[in-house]
Every structure is written in structure tokens, then in C-alpha cells.
Length: 416
Image 1: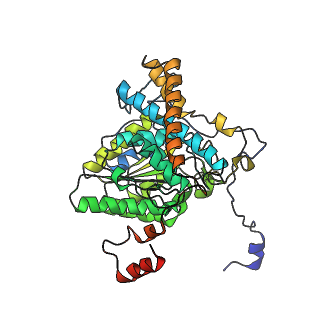
Image 2: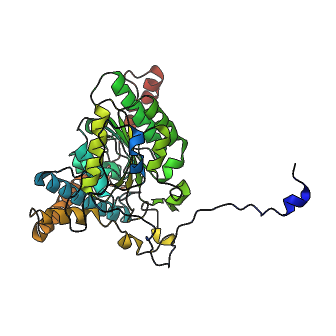
Image 3: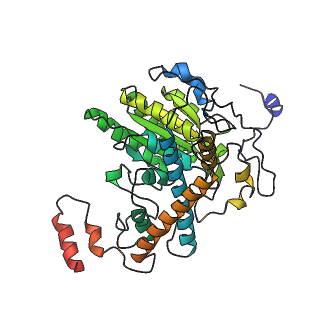
């Protein structure tokens, strides 16, 4: 045992409280971010053992260089038509976000969440996955639905909580759900998406199906137990699933260091579970596509799950209830070193000779027109507090294949 005299000479313990480098009024500083040259990260074979690719958890897979050229082994060599499609879908996502944000400010819906600066993630991954693969998204993957062709009107009906709401008023605005388009119901408690994605993937493998699953959470959710449960099951049972962590630097108003992002990368957490772990430039459409396609091919070959950290930046507030200028410099989004995903893909297409400013302007205008037309149609069905709402009888539907007697009686008592 130590004597009292020795204890007096020990330094006092102190607790480390992570804090962001910059607060409102400070000059944005991203000098701590190490960005490797585009094309400099090796691409392993899908059958490589996770221990052979551990360095990928600390590096950053990038394809597009500063001049918009696709370089390196991860270049997926997408044809111009696919690239134009991806860019057009990202423009529609951005126009949709803008219109719905303004609708919330006008009182037409109670809530909205934008994905500005993160459009390449959902759109590129929608392109890399098969149409039948099941997605367990967060609330910033509206690009999955838009890229898969889900009607904008149906998305807006859900946001406006009108009588044509596909989920009949059972979810918060923006928490879409459509089995036909492989889009599992969003959970406000995002951690649940990961174990559900793993469970669905395990069931698909158990049945001998050929469809895989993909789940999305944010950086903050990696600190929750659900993340670790999912990683463990995915590893042990080699579930055919892609586990995506969107590190957009902020979990509501808490910066990513609170979840441990300053101590290591989020991708590195997969190493302890024996999972391949990729860290990807989330603002690089080609890099996101390539990494997702690699992980999907691996899953379809019965080689198991992959954890992908998509390194990006949340340019707007967490939601319409949030003011990011209260906890970070107002001009910080403009200083993000990995740029704007829309502008980067535009630059790439121009470098290929497949795009120009006039075509881009026309595409932007077309995206706005699509959204405007859909909004007019959805608004005609009613908006929050104005127009028809789902019938009371819908609360008894879609729960049981055969409605039990007590619910039949309750429905009769309501007169519907």
C-alpha cells in the first residue's frame, strides 16, 4: 500500500472533455485534417483478409483530383450517361431540400431535415446497390428514394401529413417508408437501423436469397450500443450487409469528437470486429460509388459485411429546429476542404467534355421545375393544418393480417 506521504506527491487527476477547435466568432480551421492525394490509396481484392487492409480505416479513398479527373485504382470508370444521371439526381435532391425547407418556414409542415453537402452519399450508393437491396437509412438519405425513382409527390404528401400520406400519419415528416422501393422506415433513434439491417441481411442469407442490406447512421450514433451489437452480429455471421457511418462532423450540436472521432477514425472501429473498414471521401461521387460497389460485391460473394465511414460535412443545420451558428463559425461550411459534391461531379463531367455551364444551368432549372410541379400536386392534397388528414380508420390498418376481435370492436365504436 502507498503511504499518505507518497499520495500527496501525485498529480491530481483531470478529465478530458473533447471540444471543437472552432466556435462562433472563430476563424474556421481544418488544418488537422489529413487529405491524401486522389488515387493514392490501394484497392484490395474483395477476398482479402481484413487484417491485410487495416490501413484503409485511417486513410481516405479518393478518386476525383483537384482538376476533376478520375485517377487511381478505385476509379469505377462510370460511363457519361451514369455520371449525368447521378448529377441530375443530386440536383433534384438539392432542389427538393430547398423547397421543403421553405415549406416548413411557411408553416406547411412541422419539421424538415436537409442533406446539403451530403447528396453524393445517398445518390452514389443508390447507383451502386441493386434495386432489390434493402436500405435502412437515416433521415439524410432522401437521395436513395429520388435516385430509385420514388415519386416526389408521395414524399411531399408524407411531409405535409395530408390524406395521401403513404404512411398514414404514423411517422414524423421526412421519415419515409416504402417496401416497394427497398426503403425501411426511418427511426428517429438512428442506432436501431444498424441491427435491423444486419438482421434483415442474415435472414436473406438464411433463405438463400441474393439481396443484400445496407444501413446508415451518423457519427454520433457510433457511441451507442446498437452500433456495437450490429458489428458483432455482422462479423460473427458474415451477414451480407454494408454498414455506413456518415461522419458529417456534427451530431445535432455535438461535434464528432464527443463520439470519439478525435481519438481514432470511425472506420477503425470495424477492425476490432474483424470487419473490412473503408474510409471514403463522402463528397466524391466516384469514390462513394466505388467503395459501395466493392463492399456489395464482397457481400454477394458470401465474404461478409463491410464498415464504411463516409467523410463529409453537414453544411446546413441538423434540422429546421436547429441554428448551427450558435455552436460553429457561420462560414465554416464554405471552408470545408473536400468541397461541394455537386460542383465536383460537375467539374468531372466538364473535364470529360460531357457537360458545360449551360447544360448545368438547364439541369438545375429542370430540377426546380420537377420539384415545383410535384409540390403543387401535393399541396392540392393539403398541408399541415390545411386540408384533409388521414382517416381515423387508418389507425387500425396495416397492423395485423387478420384484425383481432378487440380492434374490430374499437373500430366499430369509433363509427368508421
